[in-house]
Image (cartoon, rainbow, N blue to C red; front, side, top):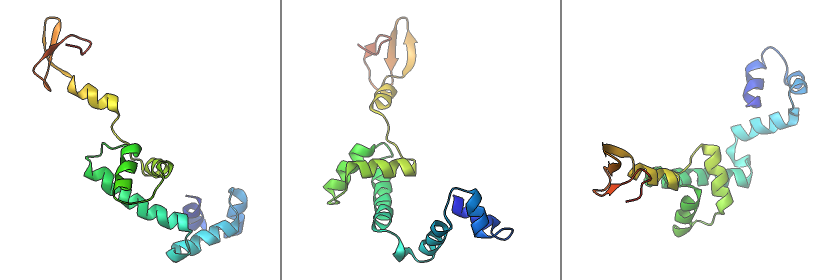
Length: 135
């Protein structure tokens, strides 16, 4: 983010004065620019994260965007990928992906559609239930 800011204002000011005002060292800016130009110079973790993000996105999409980090992690392990759960959690958080909570998926089944007195009929099942969701 700061690198983009520096790039935008590099025409008006030099990199070093901008970096003095921002909490970033000029060497950090230059290393980042070199890595953008040559992706082979990225760290091993960053390169692996890029591959994992694609796999996580694929598994998440294939499962109707309801899998959370735990289920995505289990699916990746079933497919033979060695990855830790905390890595999957971190990458999903960075990507803005999250699963459907168990409570939310259960609540959807019991959304009332018609009311008959004190009993509620759910569209997901044909059994009457009271207001607490219990039959």
